[in-house]
Length: 337
Length: 300
Image 1 (cartoon, rainbow over the protein chains, first blue to last red):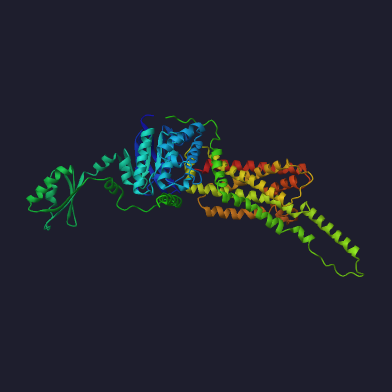
Image 2 (image 1 turned 30 degrees about the vertical axis):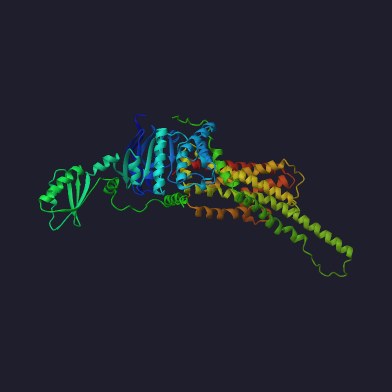
């Protein structure tokens, strides 16, 4: 492999001849990185992942995973990847160990190897104590960990995670991130994940692509994306606010943009900490006094809003996808009751 | 990291998937007991409650007054003659004097039909719950995903057939002149073949479906016609002419005929071989269609 675990060129999927779920997408994932696919529901994340894991055929375009063509060498792709779908796919009537062994059998891994690997993986995700309990008795977090373990049974080069923490509560979500980091450290695989939680992408991913309406709108490291917004955000209010002093503030070096909204100024600045005193000096020189001031570093939240618009759009996926997501959410919550 | 070489055995995972389905059955005591009780109820209802033989034999018939009145001896003789006639009618119609025996072999076909019918449902469930996608992302053969459901239905059918036979013997099934315990292997072979064919059909219908409702409708549409347009409950020779060709195509007719020959009747070798050839072709054709469809349609 030449340093790229996944190469995607012009990948497109059209459903029912008119619904363009993924629209000529191009990107590549470097070997060893955690690559995040971020976007609102129905943006095309799961469709992209399903094409890369050879479950769905692209309408157009091509992609290589681990150097294998997803259309021409699907078996080689399948052998070199691990998949954790959005849904809880572990069989509820079987216990944890049986589920992992079932996955191993699907890869044709000999029993003596799979037994050892299963024990090791269960140990890593701390389910050894529960390996003989039926999965119906597991909590959402435990199920997610079991899915992670199942996905790694074939020691994949590329690990696909589709919404790995969907429906989990905040604490369990953070714990799940730690398990993902731990597994990544242990096995060193490339990770491709989709998510619509911003903290998750910020926390885990080395690079992020934001996808909306089936198109990639921006791509880069979390820091690059934040910096791409053009700096920090400063908000301030002024006493006796009758005149608009925006033009004055704009003249301060490093100030990129000033907007006055409902009596407060929203100022985009580079190097906020150093520029803020200069802005205050200018305002005082004009004879005004500042009553409130705040300075925020940009978060991925702002990046996300900038690129995808404010409102989170309603789910536009199929009825089937909706059903699966609801089942996942319900099961995730079951354990925490 | 080790790259898993493409498994040498193309059938890897087939047993694992089949066993997954079977475990749901045998590890769940309620489901297991219910599926055993069900054939028993059918046998009781159809075999005993609707005892067609009883219509002829147990109704006291008041003979019209004859002059001069019959002597006691004559009355007894007439009674005997009548019961001879009725058992001849039964024998001619059902091939055995005992409708219960006739019926209980039919129940084997019936139980197989109902068990295989549900194999389509399980693929719809797997699709809806995401397990199907998970399995499709592994190198397991697409055909194995389908065949695991077929084998699950077939294995269940054979076990249920054995249970039905056990009950039937306990309740007084009268075996035919050619019956030896070895014939039972033939019965299981016939159930095996019909099970493969029928469950392949039901899975092929469900292969792209995402709705349980559609699948239920298909099942309801097919099951009773398949059952009644066959010799499972009633001899086809007495059915109307327009129905005869349907019964001749219906595989249920062949499995039932094979089993009746093996258990109840005198074996007609030629007819028995024909039955098995038909069942074999039926199984081969529909499992092939199922596998080909699974390559093409299991992933969208």
